[in-house]
Amino acid sequence: MRVPSPSRPAADLRTHARRRTRLRPVKLVTLHKRFIEDGSAVDLSSGGARVRRYGKGMLPPSLILLDEAEGTLRAAFVVWQAHGEIGLRFAGPAERMPPHELSRLAGRFYAV
Image (cartoon, rainbow, N blue to C red; front, side, top):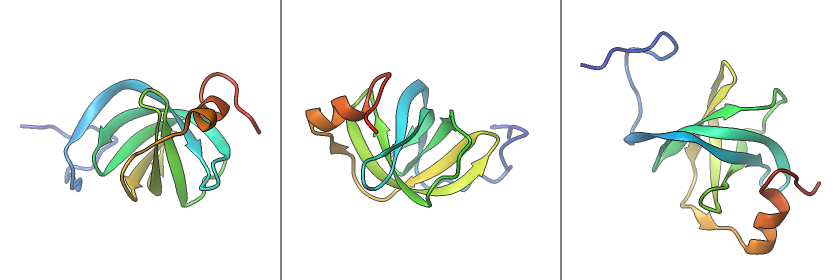
């Protein structure tokens, strides 16, 4: 039997099975592929993700999740925000990022 954590509701409303990650590095990017902030994917599923944010700024309701480990982009909607984390619902399939775009956004430094 699964016991709910204090930060999660007793009723789990997920529609997709999730899998924990080992704090996979991600970047939050605008729909125009401009850097917003760094983060770490805590949970991933085929339908969405839970991301630990490293920034505190406002986020747009729609954005792109750049998975640095996979080199993929996923358009997503922000469905919740709490305690430095956000929940994302993916709006489509993952797409491979072209190498020149990946080098511009990924890694320690990014182009503005």
